[in-house]
Image (cartoon, rainbow, N blue to C red; front, side, top):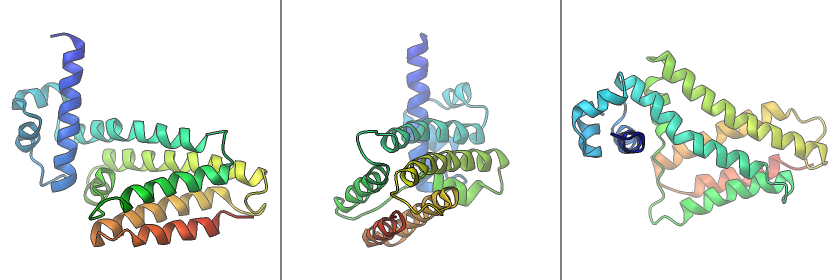
Length: 197
């Protein structure tokens, strides 16, 4: 079997398995259900993953590396001012949810962190590393905004980045619970007031 086919099968198991695990939770998603969703035999799972925990770790990396790269690119777009980059990025996300007939959000990292962060130090550390990398990207953009006078000179950009990232995760959790995009509009309005001279 060539390496491309092997990689495609692994990617398929990761993608379909992550959907199952997001919907049913870590403990509710059995290996059998994951392989059924991917349409592969059970042996294929253990060919690529040593355990369900190993699968969850690889799925986190597979799903969030492209998202982190898109976030870093958006916040590094030199064609826009730093403040415009941040507000534009979150505005696009809010508009995405507003276009849905019934706004909903299925968050793999959120589901895993609530269920497994304390039970699996490896998963907890991976989730924290992903969230920290996101906050670090935001902090760099906030520092640029500060240098250009778009943010108060006495603002603690690290603390602000952490607060914004946590507030966004909280807003997504509320969206999942209430299926009402208004909470995202509230987030965006507050963000606009937070990021100003």
